Image (cartoon, rainbow, N blue to C red; front, side, top):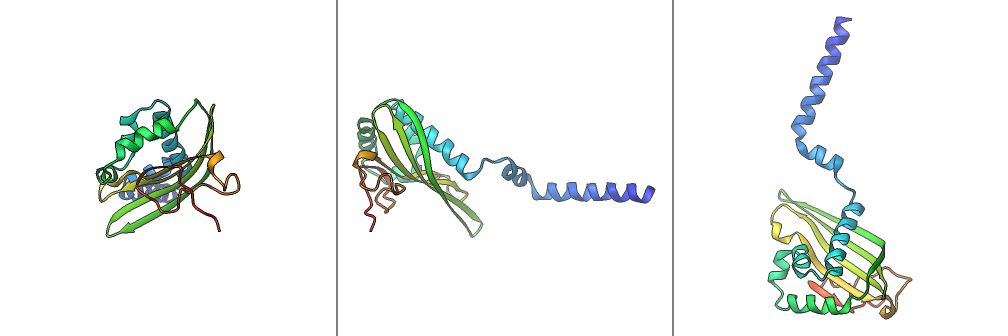
Length: 181
């Protein structure tokens, strides 16, 4: 009886030591939202800022290194506010592609997201290339490329998921499509 109690206690201690050596990352991953949930949360933040014409909020969601390289970011944001119309009604996720890169101790993760956002005025097709993680440079975290197009102007709607022009052009891109061959 004593041997089995000692064995169980030893096993529990070894198990606890293994978890503590793994660090908090194990528990972070265990309780982190799924990629789809994380992407949906990011989209919701973006749409809320768009709905409220919150330029500072939109700017905060973009990768700061991308904004710094764009001379016309503020103008394109104003065009976006003029383009987007109506009150939010619903959203449909079409896809969340995930790209991971672990190179030289630096971890990076991107979401290639596509949604249809319905407002009281129109259906908007939105595509994002969003850097969710960069342990090497936090200035890369955020939206790198955003596309928006009214569904009525998309010759590929509803047959194909919207991906913008397929070029991942940095910044805000309005009305661009990609030809499906």
